[in-house]
Length: 375
Image 1 (cartoon, rainbow, N blue to C red):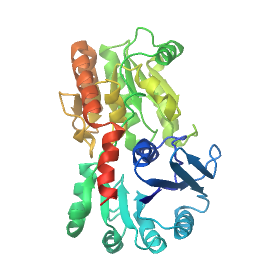
Image 2: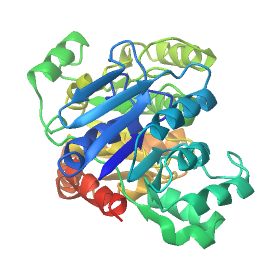
Image 3: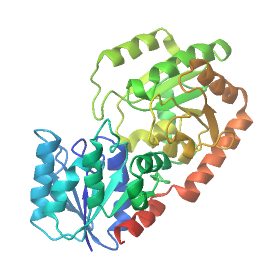
């Protein structure tokens, strides 16, 4: 079959600037391309050629100038020039109408990585028209699938959950030469490291983690928070929230390292210097992919019970769930419980790695996705 994977206008594939969707596409490509002709349609990037063959995969990169509508027009124009058996559209239901006209006869699949069909994002009448055109909808979590099915029960039969995955070789437990060099450079030798990876955004809750660390330091003054991530992928620019986070962090002195943006191919080393991982989602997170990366690296996880996070973190098995999700006190108590108990950290971390090996490798993701694409 000839398959087109249509990425969003935000970031390029491969994920040279990061991005969960871009990482997902890159992860499944080696498996999809052994059985089918695959073309990835994405946005241009200065680091990448506009057209290239990468192994058995063709990449076609189009300008995102002018915003999503103009980008969608360019995608449709490209698709109209060739014949397709399947087109999978990632996280852009508004593109579906154009693509259906550009690729008549193709099987149409929508991959939902956020609540893109919710009424506050898309008029329900338009959402129903889009769903009627689709052959299948892949949701990144049960949370996204169930919330979509509740809105549009007549299309529930088209929905299937396929959770994301992780590179089990690049993300693995134990120190590495790179992580040990980072530990020395960041001044972390001999100190327990609380690791957080995520964009500096209010919905990611970095301010809550910092407030929790104020309490953690009362009982564990040697602990240090390492926060990896910037406001947006690929650079370290600021806004009012980032400035507020930096001010909040400065009050904790040597107990915080705001690392900023890290290229995706270097992220594994940061996970491997952590003693525990914390995620403080303050919004209804679809299911943050950082959980898979932390599990693969054998880190016990502290995460808020928001959206789909609890689908992969079981309280007391591979991590601790924080309720209420907005409570710095509750977050601090969970972090303190893990810092107090090395055996608990080891047990939860080992269980997480086992979960990652059993169910979150890219081969599993690709196998389930192929079942949908092949109909």
